[in-house]
Image (cartoon, rainbow, N blue to C red; front, side, top):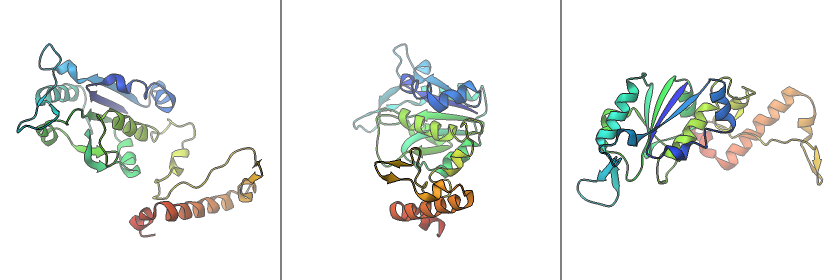
Length: 228
């Protein structure tokens, strides 16, 4: 999979992709993330990519010309399955969306900045708009990093244990069960006996029960969504 990211601040995204799981994914050739500075397509020698908004009001708007030129140049190199704009008013990112996008081959992510991007770009180029929550950040770079991380760990071969992602919270609309590791007793706090039983079937049953219980306590809306 290849993910291209268009941003006015590519340096904000260099670190998240240079470590841990995403770094290993790149080294294995499973996920390539390429950062592109929008200023490469600036409208003048000063690197301008934004301007005042029509009708007045506070905040600058990312201009049509550099965005259109950049998107068309990148699309000329490969066909994108989705052109995604990270925006607070997009559909809220969830595990289902991450699962869907992990099956794609080529994605282009547009990071908004300032007051946002000219609406005409959204109308003519963007195929999907995604939000990471009902709040506003300074730009779309951090949301883009979150989206890439959520997608990347689902690509077969990225995680050392490929079954790990299948048991993450939200994969089956349930929160993950409690987890424990050694020692079995710490300050008189004991690991549940069932996890030490060596009976995989009973362990799986316990984990499912715990997932249901935790979800009912913390996120009952997830059970309502599934009619559970």
